[in-house]
Amino acid sequence: MKSNIICLRKVIGKILFYTIGRFLPSPQFPITPIAYVSKRFRGLCGKLILEKCGKNVNICGRSNFSSRVELGDNSGIGYKANITGKCIIGNNVIMAPECLILTNNHSFSRTDIPIKVQGADKEETVVIGNDVWIGMRVIILPGVKIGNGVVIGAGTVVSKDVPDYSVLVGNPARVVRSRKL
Image (cartoon, rainbow, N blue to C red; front, side, top):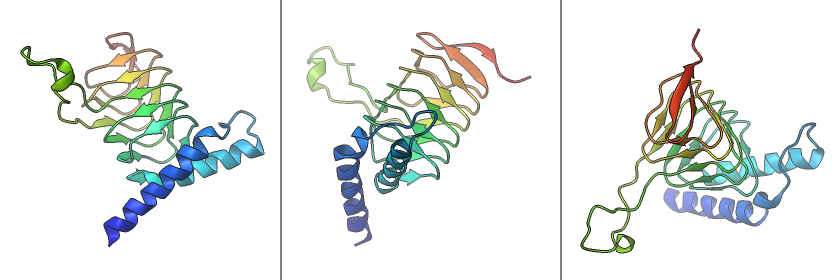
């Protein structure tokens, strides 16, 4: 019975978000009353849809995300972001527009059959620590663990785990400096 209620809650949340919430205006500075209401409405949808949803979240419009995402307090999902599968996002995470977080990939190990029919690899959870800034159009690949206090520059492709307080740029991502004193 409890699982049926959870499924119904997620369905209602998805209907509300994908028919109304996605298209409401995003918060701007200074914040307008309609943007404030939009943010609150999308936060409510997040609480219905997501596996775990913290307080004061900011789910921007036109984003797509799995119901298996865990979103921490004061964190956000950026405008037009796309998050597939299981992703754990910590507290105080800023996500710029058009980020892509992937949790699985196509299988391509066999050469005797087309890649198209080989299916997908096993899903690998992406974990993003606390106090992370993810720049515009960042791509995070399956199984990556991003440490606390990390800054990821725009357009970076993250394919390996990232240590705490690193600043990353490029494709493939490389650490350019540490934020630690």
